[in-house]
Length: 491
Image 1 (cartoon, helix red, strand yellow):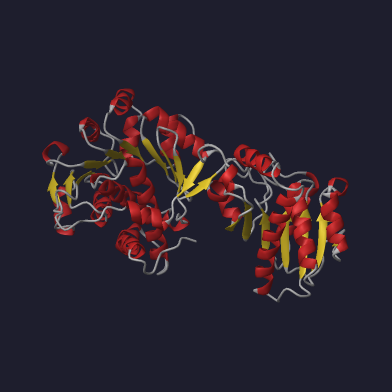
Image 2 (cartoon, one colour):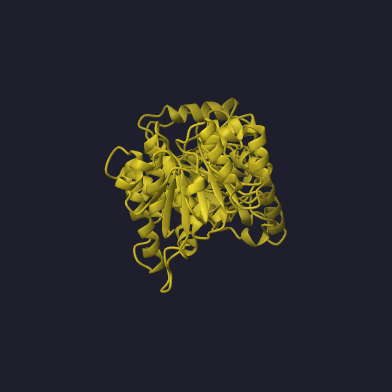
C-alpha cells in the first residue's frame, strides 16, 4: 500500500525534518534526486554530455530545486538554461549555483531542446496558472517537436490536494515526487498530467503525522487479500453470490454481470431476474430463478444493472435491501434509491452496502456532480449513505463511511464503454460473497477490472465482452504474484 498525503501534512513533516538538518539540506536532497532522473532521461536520448536542458523556474522552492538540479547537470557537461517567471524572486542561492556551474539565464526558448524541467510552481500554489508562468506553459505546449518534460514534485497548474486542473497546466512525462505521494499524483485529471511518478526519498516519511488522505493498493496487496479455496473448501463455503440484474429489455446486463461474478472467488452463482431463461444456456453453472425471493440463500447480492426502474424492479431492490447480507447496488438500483423511502431503507441496513455510481448516478443521489474534489465527494456520499462508495472514473475512488479512501491505479480509458460496469459489479459481488470486507472488495475489484481492461486492450478495440473474458487472466496474475512468478505491475 502506498500512502498519499495532503499539503498540510507534507509541510508539517518538512518543518519537523528541517529542524534536524543543516540549512538547505532538504533542497539539496531533492535536487540530487531530480538531477539523477534528468540524467536517466537524457541518456535514453542523445546522451548527457552536450545535451540541452531548459529549466522553467518559478519563485518558490520548486524553482530552487530546479536550479540546483540544473547546476548538477551543468557539471556533467549539459548545456543548461533557465527561463525565469519572476527574475526578482528567483531562488538567489540556486541561481548563483547554476551560474557558477556554467548554466545561464535565458530570455527566449532555444531552437534545440532535449529536456524541459518544470519548476514553475510547487505544492504551495493555488489556483490556475497566470502571468508569465501561464505564458511559459503555453509556449511549452506549442513546442514542435515537443521535448520530454520532467515536473518538480507536481506539474505546474494542478490543484495538489484534489487532483483538479483549474486551467492551463503543464503535462509532464515524468514527475519526480519528493518524500511522499500527493493527491495530484494519483487522482483526478492531474494524475494524467503527472505521467510516470517517481518517488525520491528525502527523509520525510518518519515525520508524516496522521492517517494518509488516500491509499493506493498495489498487486501484492490485492493478491494478499484475494480469497483462495483451501483443501476442505466446497462451493458453499467459498461463498454464494446472488445476481439480480438485467431484464427482457436489457438481457446483456445479466450476462455481463454474471461473467464478472463467475470470474471471482465465489463458489456458486445464483441469478434472479426476468432474463433467467437466457442465463442458463450462456452460463450452465448458474442457478437461475425469476425473482430474488425465489433465488435461495446467498452470502451477497449484486443488484441493478439493466434492471429497469418500474415497480417490479423497485420490488427487487427492496428485497435485496431487506436481505441480511452484503449488497452491491449499481445503475438502475442507484436511480431507484433517489426515492426517499428506499434511501431510508438503505441507511437503516445493518449489513454492508456498496454503491458503484458513475458521475451522473452520483449526481442523482447527492444532488450535484462530484465537482473538483472527487475524493471528498465519495467520502461525503459514503458517510451519508453509510455505504462504501466506488466512484467510477479513470482513477476510480473508493471511500468508506469512516472516511477511509483509496484510489485505483490500474484504470484505463478503454473501460469507458457500455457494459464494463456490469462486469465490475459481478466481480465485486463475488468478492463480497467470499467474505472480503466491503472496502477491500471494492478496491480489489476495481484493481483487477482495470488490469482486465489493459489486457483486453492489447488485442485492439475493447468491448465489455472482451473485459469479461480477460478477467480470468487478470485474476491468474494475482496467483503468480503470490507464488513469486511474473508479477503484474500497473503502469
